[in-house]
Image (cartoon, rainbow, N blue to C red; front, side, top):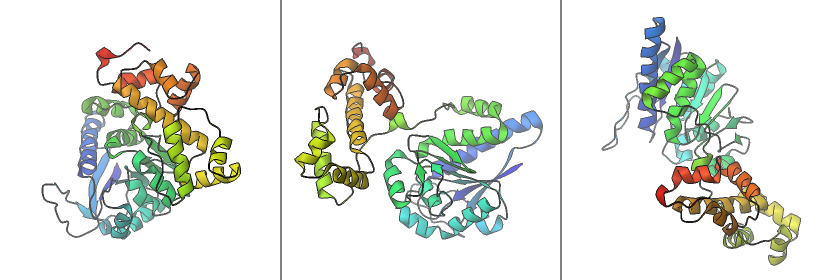
Amino acid sequence: MKHVSILVPNGSHSVVNIMGTQQILQVANERFAEQFGRKLFEIDLVGFAKSYTAVAGAAQPIPTKLWTEVRQTDIVILPAVYDDPDDAVRRNQSLLTFLIEQYKSGATLVSMCIGTYVLAATGLLNGKVCSTHWLHASLLKEKFPGLLVREEKLIAEQAGIITCGGAYAFPNLILYVVEKFGGRELAVFLAKTFMIDLDRTRQSPYMMFQGHKEHADEMILKVQEFIEIHYAEKFTVEDLASQHHLVRRTLERRFKTATGYSINEYTQRIRIETAKKDLEIGRKSVTEIMYDCGYQDSKAFRDVFKKYAGISPLEYRQKYAKEVGELHAA
C-alpha cells in the first residue's frame, strides 16, 4: 500500500484540488479492493499548523495529521496556492522542509498549478522539466531560471517529480498518478467514472499569448507595440532595428532578455493568437484568417498554428467557435 500525503498549505489554497484528489483516490481504493482485496492507497491530509482559520463562505479541509507526525510517505501532493507566490513560500517554510526530506527519502512529489512555484523554492526542480498554469509560466521562468518550464505540457515528470498545468487539470494529474502506481485499467475505470478525458496531454489549446511586458526596457516595449500593430505586414529584424536605431544583434539580445522570446517567435505567437480569436468568432474562413494574419502558404500556417495551439486551425474552430452552424467551410 502506498501512503499518500495530500498537503494542506498555510494560507489560501485550492480546496477543490485537495478534496477532489481525496475523492478520486478513495474511489480508486474501492475499485482496487474489489479486484484485489486490499486498498492501493493510505490517504492523509497533512497540515502545517495546529489550527486553520476558515474563510467565510469557503470550506476548509481538516488535516488528519501534522507534518511532524509523518515519518515517511510514498507520494506527496501539493495543491494550487492562491496567495501571492512569494507570500505562499514565506508562509510555508515547514512545508518546504517536508518536501525536501520526503523527496530525499524516496517519495514521489506531485504539484498542481502554481503549487509548482512553491515546489521550485525547495531547489528540487532545478534542471528538471516541469509545468504550471500557462498564465504563471513567465513568472516561474523569471524567478527560477534553472527550471526547464514546458507550459505547453499538461503534465511533466522527471526524476520522481510530477507537475501539471492549470488547477482544474488536477483530475488528469491524479489519473496519471493512479496509472503509475495502480495500472492503466484502474485509470481508465476512474476516467469513465468521473468523465475525465484521460489522454489530454497539452495545455496549448487553452493558452492565450499575452506578451511579456513587465520589464523596464522602453525601447523593446516600442518594438513589441509595433509588432502587435503591424503583425500582418512583411518586416524583417533588420527593418525593426533600423526603425528603432539599433544594431540588429543588440536588438535581438535586448528583445530576448526583456521578453524571453526571439523576435520571430514573438511575431508568430501574436499572429497565431489573432488567428485563434478570429476562429472563435467563426465568421471568416480559415483561408481568409490565414491571409489576414500575414501568412501566404496554407501548410506553413497550419504547421505554425499547430506548433503553438497544439491542434490544427480547423480543430480549434470546432472546439471553440460559438455558432457552429454559421461557420464557413475552410
